[in-house]
Each structure stands twice: as C-alpha cells, then as structure tokens.
Length: 212
Image (tube, rainbow, N blue to C red; front, side, top):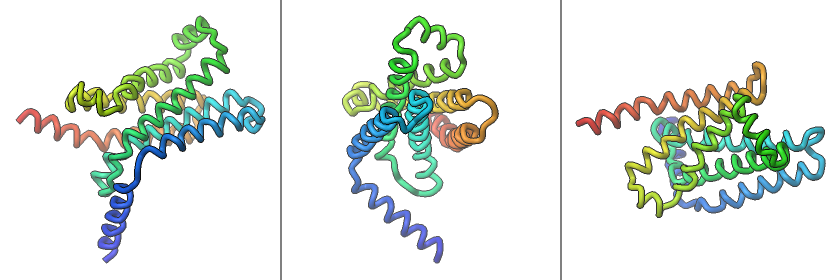
C-alpha cells in the first residue's frame, strides 16, 4: 500500500512537471544574479564583497551542475522524470559560471590579463576552474535545437558528455578554493562522484548495445 502511494505521488509529480514550462527558470536565474550583485553593492557581503560574490555565483553554478547530473539517476532509480529541465539547468549553471568569471575578471583582477594568465598557470584552483568553464562553453553554445540538428543526435550526445568531467573539475575547484579540509566542498565532491558512478552501468550497457 505504501509503495502504491509512492507510485501515485511520483506519477503526480511527473504529470505536474510535464505541464511546467522551462523558460521561467532563466528569469529566476537572472533575478538571483541581480539580487546577489545588489547585496554586494549595498554592503551586505562585507568585509569582502567581491570574494563573497564570486563564491555565491560559483556555488550556485556547481549546485545546478549537480542537479543536472542527478536527472538521469532520478529517472532510472526513482522514476522521477525531470529530463525536460536538463537543458535549462545546464544553461542556468553556465550563466552563474559566467557571472562568477565576470566578477573575477572585472572586480577581482580588474582586467589585469597578464596577472590572470599567470594565476591560471600557477594556481591549481584557478586552473581547474578555467578548465571547467572551457568545457562548459561548447555545451552552452550547442544547447539549442538548431545546432542539435546540425550536429546530429549521436555527435551532440558525445559532445555533451563533457558535462561529466567539467562538473568534477568544478568540484575540485571548489575544494581548492576553500583551502584545508572542509566538509561542504568534500560533500559536493562525494555527491558528484556518486552520481558519476551511478551512470557507469548505464554507459556500459550502451557500449554493449552498440557493439551488437
């Protein structure tokens, strides 16, 4: 009886999400970006508003990457179908990552490109962060139906598997930013590792099916 109630609840959730549009997500993301910037301007993020702004944007980007990564396991193991939101979550993560990078370039480094290049090469946490953003960029560019059709489904899916290493790089970036042994970044890293491990049997099955 309990399992029947759970199945009914999952069915109701799936029916509700099918009716929900994805476009409001982008408005919420832009509003959140603006809100955090306003908080920094008004002194709410003292004593270091630039660093706090970087952390807030970066953490939100990482959380949305994890949410996107969790969609397939949720469908496979729990029957919850949020697949229609994957693209919106990925693009929203990109917008937060872009805001994170913009704050670093404009407010933290003040467009000192020589110093930025030196830091990218010498500081591992910046190296990981820039590598993650570089992998995210082609995914954001190709996250539309026109380029999906041009690339073809198979090539598009192969390209978008870059989401796995980029999310891992983003988590390592966060671990390194916090410095020392801190629980929160390690929890994110562990969660991402678990989500990637859950995908392994599915990936092996697809490889076996293609080999037949």
